[in-house]
Length: 466
Ligand SMILES: Cc1cc2nc3c(=O)[nH]c(=O)nc-3n(C[C@H](O)[C@H](O)[C@H](O)COP(=O)(O)OP(=O)(O)OC[C@H]3O[C@@H](n4cnc5c(N)ncnc54)[C@H](O)[C@@H]3O)c2cc1C
Image (cartoon, rainbow, N blue to C red; front, side):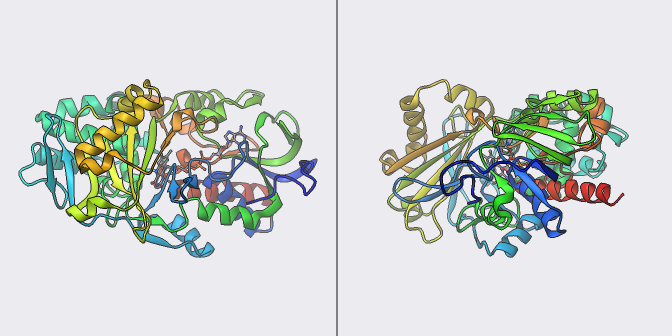
């Protein structure tokens, strides 16, 4: 871990000036800093919390099982995070998907299946047609400027919910599509525009890339946790990463930019802000940001997601021929469950994702109610052994003080057309913007975060050359 404390325990003073300051030490901020360091540009990273990684946080449970509270998977076309994995020697292993998957349908029935869905699954044809249509429309979106698409205004005026209502006749197909949207965006289909969905699909290389496990976004996990490349990058950056330095204000009225943190002030020629949009909006900018950028930030809304890890002595469901993967279409808190056991199967870990309206309902319960509700679902799926876990660990991301939700922020319907061109990520004088939300490829993912940091660093390098 980078040093935030001197040997005596006191904070080393921040330097008075630095050529480039980066705000936020998630993958985007670390990537910006690493790119600049690789070009011998001195950089200082100011991170508000007491760790690096942001929405990626790998921790051991009390019994020593490694879990990822936040992002965990990488896919084969996520070339930038894979390049980091290679650079820092962080090994991955395939996501466990051997055996029968489960589908808990909204009428209470639970079915086993292999492949992409149960044979003769209700609504499967309508789902396939709709996702093919989405892929076709997504090919018309230019990811570097989504609002420039000929149909952008119509698409940004329509929610994904109304698009499905209008174009998908079969209610069961709409049910499948709704769960897919919740699973990928941690939002309800009524909360995002069709244009944003198409942009996101285009940047990932197709709907199946977002949804599938093998050879897609859920393909593999990191042996040492998804935070391990971030920790290695921070180690490489050393004292340039300062933890517990939340940036409260950025004054860009003068020749240099003044950043006010709770640990003191720093002046920089250029600043890369790599915080989630709502966290960026909470920083006091003086002068205020241009209207398009300010409105874009105000209208970028974090998704609502929680991850629940339930740890057992062994992955007992595998003995029943089950993969541990389940999709739930009813009222359960969990929308999807995966086998998140360590690669050697030395413990059995189920991870349940709770998102959108499910999270809003479930998180109203107290600790005991939430746990009981989750264990009831897992018992229904995997049998009585699921009722007696060794450990139960929740991370409810909307409660996280630094990122306030996940997986990412998505612009509200209409925001792309109204403010996207100027507000999405165009630099404002000496201020540059990174963060997965500013990436054209794999937006919302670790890979997108790294790409965004690299792009912001290129902008800064070009400006320093002038
Ligand atoms: C539950 C969950 C599951 C996910 N699953 C996956 C997955 O499997 N695969 C995948 O690729 N992606 C996944 N994601 C998304 C992925 O985690 C994010 O896209 C990515 O980590 C975002 O990185 P970032 O650097 O842009 O932002 P962040 O990681 O949010 O980093 C921003 C940093 O800024 C800091 N900060 C905030 N305010 C201030 C301030 N005022 N001053 C200083 N610092 C500040 C924060 O503490 C944080 O460290 C998931 C996310 C969640 C929450």
